[in-house]
Image (cartoon, rainbow, N blue to C red):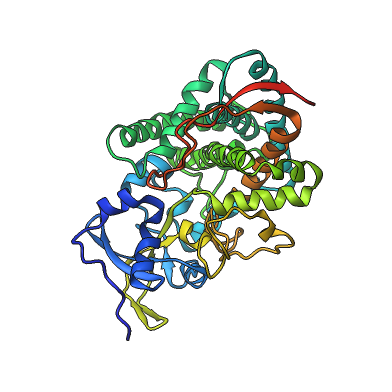
Length: 415
């Protein structure tokens, strides 16, 4: 039996925060393997990267999600009791609930609402001063997803609710004020959405049929029970928050268009080029760093022993940059996706495996739709200038974002 290479440090939590997205990859390179073990948050943890590792990690016979997500992430990003931490029949039931919302027609409708928001904002950008794209897109996505989900949102609430959702996204891997803002955002968000769920249930807020609010508020489990109000709030936030998080990918798409201007014309001329461009944005830029699970029962894999209960991290960023999967992984090359038919264990920015029954993100189709719509708007609806600013991406910061938030000026309508 091979011995899993182990980090010598008594605890690598500080190193994880220091190295960010490159924590796993750097140590895999140092050990000369795609597997090693380290203590993280005082707990032995096996770290993996690569396609075979992803295929293993999403095997429900070998791994469970219960108890895998660190509490600091539950208290900020995901909430407690949501679909991410479920297994077996309970997970299948909850995942089916989410997938019922993600029909092709519903995804297109969300994209159209985002288009409408974008076009409505362009005149204000044209008449105003500099625009911080991340901030603007965040508010646009908050308005868009709330309208789509059936969640009422007054104009006076938009800034506050966007700030709460952004705080949840920023909080899990942060220390100090950024983490505490994440906890604040989680508490405020669950209170807000819990009240919305209750109003829908008592009939004072009738939600459209098929909307996320109605589906989640009225969902009954295998025993015919409604979800507890707090859990329903967590799950509805699991629609709103990830959609707002797509704003980071929109910023990355704008950054890619700025750094690779020849692609502006290509995406204007071809839907296939737009698809390839968006997939490369998702592969190349840092989004989720890792996913967590626990070993269901002891097993051996490739000569390594995985003991029951051991926490395991899959390096999503490292898998998307693995040289065995992606030639020249540190180059932005949308051409690599020309004619690509998909591989659920190679491109894993939002998890791997199957959408319908596994732990792959239920909102991945929404992500692709929204970023494609954004790329179209950035290249056809308007023109703009990119003034000098700090656009460097630090892979130590999780989640990553250019310090400037991507500033644009001189916006003018073209369509």
